Image (cartoon, rainbow, N blue to C red; front, side, top):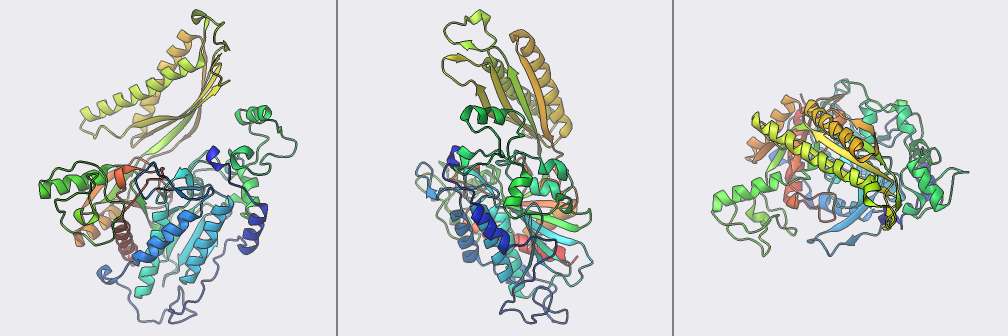
Length: 566
C-alpha cells in the first residue's frame, strides 16, 4: 500500500461532493437531452411515442470512439499520478482508485454527469452504490440490470470492472439513440468497493444489496488504509496511538482505534442507514454483467482457432495492444514480432459464464518463540516462519490433490485454486528469529463441499505442524461465500445472440469472483466475458482490444433489449 503515499483524503473534496450530491432513496430526474422527442416522457419518451419496442441489433451502432475515450478518461482519475509503466508491454497505464478517496468521488460524479446528460435518472444509496435508471413503459415489471465496479487496487490496470460500467452505459445510450423503448426498466449499477483494499472484504456494495452482509457488521468494518499509506492527515480516532510502534500494534490488534466504514462513508457524503441498501428478491427480472475474463482461456482458444484455420505456428502469446476495431475477419498467417495476433488476424471469442467460483478467506496466526538469530541455537527454536512455510506448501499440495481427484471423476481438474497472498512476519528483522507470522489464505472452488474438504485436509496438517514444531496456530474464517450458478435461460439468451451474429463463444467458469456472485442471491444472473491479453489483470499491462470491448458491448446491448421486452 506504499504506492498510495501521494494520495490524500481531502475533507474539502468530500464536502464539495456531499453538497453537490445529496443522497436519498429517490432517483434524480434525468437531464433533458436535445435528442428527446417528448421532454416529459419516461426516460426521454412518452408512452404515446411510436418508436421501436423490438430491435435489430445489427442496425444499432455502438459508439466505440466515445466508449474508448471514456475508458481512457476514467484511467486518468487515479489516486496516484497516471504513468505508463515501461516494464510492461504498451499500453500499460497504472491505475489506483481506492473507494472514497477524492479521485473515486470525482469518478462517481463524472459517471453520474454522463448518465444524466444521456437522459437517464440516477440515485445513490447509503453505501455509495450508483443506480442509473431508464424507466420502462411498465414499471410494475421486474428490472433488467447490468453493471460492475470502478474501484481499482494499487498499481492496477484500466479495464477491470470499468468495461462493465462504461460498456453498460454505452449499451443503454446506443439503444436509446436508436429509439428503442424498453417495456421493463433498465438499470446500470456501479458497485461500491468490489475490491477489498480498503475495508478488507470484497464486493462490499453488492454484499449489502444481496443481503449477504449485515448492515451493522458492514458499518463496523475497519478502515485498513493507514495515515502513512495515504499520506493524509490522521485517519485514526482522537486519542488513538500515533507513534509508529503504537500504530503498528493497533493494526494487529482490535482495530478499535481506527476509523470504520461508517466514519469514512459519512465523511465522503454517503449518509443514511445501511438497512436501506438491500434489495428484495424479485426486484430484478435478470442481471447480466460484462467483464474482462482476467484469465488466459479465451485468448488461448483464439490462438488455437487461428492455428487450425491457418496452419501457421504462433510463436508467442497475447494479441496486439495497438489494434483498432475492424470487425471479425478470418485470421491470416502473419504475426507481430513478439508472435502476438494482430486484431485483424484474430476472431474474438466471447465467454459465457455458467458458474462463478467463490472464495473462502482465512487468517492464520502462527505464534512461536523469537530470539537472537545468532544466540538461539537451531534445536531450541520454535520459528513461526518455518512453520508458516509448511502451511503454505500444504495449501498448495492439498489444492493440487483436490484437482487431481476431480479429474479422475471426469471434471475439469482445474476448478480448485488457493493462494496465500499476504504474509506478515514479526518482528521482521534479518537478525531476529520470527516469533509471530500472520498468513492470509484465499481458497476458491465451484463446489463448496470440495473446498471444505480441502480445508479439512489442511487443518489436519496444521495440527501436526503445531505439535511437531511447538508453535501455536489459530485460524479465523473471514468469509466463506457460496458459488453462483448462471440462470439457464440467460445463458441460452447469450448463446443464441452469439449464434445469430456468428460470434464464437466458450461456456466457462469464472474463477475470479464478481459482484454478480452476490446479485445471484436476489436475481437470475449471467456474465459475459471478453478476452484480455495474456490473461493478465490487476496489473498495469491489463489490456482488452477495442474490437473485443465493442463486440461485448454490442452483445450486452442486444441482451438487455431482449430481456427488457420479455
